[in-house]
Length: 64
Image (cartoon, rainbow, N blue to C red):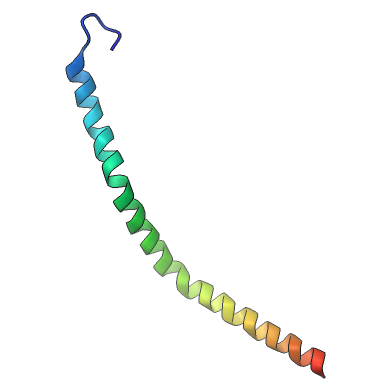
């Protein structure tokens, strides 16, 4: 916008990809989050089961 006269068509042309990226970001984020959640959920459950087993062993050692 510092040119004389201002080049408005260039500003509009460069703004279009910016607005498209700004508008699609929430959907892309949700999609990526859902995909990552489905990948990590089984691993988290496996680690919780391991912790549960370790705690059970610890309780048995304390009671014996």
